[in-house]
Structure formats: C-alpha cells, structure tokens
Image (cartoon, rainbow, N blue to C red):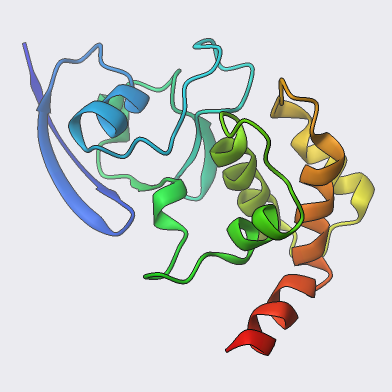
Length: 163
C-alpha cells in the first residue's frame, strides 16, 4: 500500500504517494526526473549516489524514500544558482576532476558536505573524507586538486575575473 511522503528537494516541496519499499535514488531519478544522481554499486559502497538529507551525506541507494518524510534533500542539480555553477562544479570542470562522469555528482556532493563541515580542510583531510567515493577511472588526483582549488579560493577568483 502506498504512503504519502512530503519532503523538499533542491528547495521545491513535494508530496508523493509511493510504495514503502522504493529507494530514494529511484524516486529522485524516476519520479522527479533528477537524473544527476547516479547509481553505481547499489549497496552503499561507491558514493556515486551521494545526496544530502538534512545536511548529512546519504547513500540514496540505501535510503528508503519514506524515511525522507519532512526532510530537506539536496542533489547535484540543487547546487547551481540559476546558470551559475557552484564553485565545486566549476572547479571540477576547470581542474579536470571528472572522467566518465558516473562518480562526479557523488564526488561533488561529498566534497560539499566536507566544506559545509570544515571550510578549510588540509589536503590530507580532503583525501581522508573522500575515501568513501570511488572512481573507476582512477581520477583521484584531479578530484582532490579540484576540491583544493575551492578551498584555496582559486575558483572564486577565476569566476570574479570573468564577471
């Protein structure tokens, strides 16, 4: 029997009738059309499906959508402000922090969660935090470089110079 669930995704309120066994990733992708969140391993190990729920990182492939009742959810689509990318999104472009793109949304969401908790991490702290996000293309150096560019303010300065 379906249950009515209300939550906010990227600032938009939703009220959905969903089966209690549906995963959050499936509701985000299939019902809401937010396909930026990717499914990698389906067992919560790779980090590709990372979103934030009430400000905390969550593997959306493991979370039942009914458990998001009343929650504030942010996906990769919710980071940009209009046509202006979030600094992490811009850094991943400028510093080559993506390869095939499957892990990129989860990498960026995990990095944002880190910077929300610690705006000035060391490179070692970034490496440690990001160990839960796997990249099959082995692009870790450029991922870390992209995050560090934001930490060091290089992306913000580059954006200011072009506006």
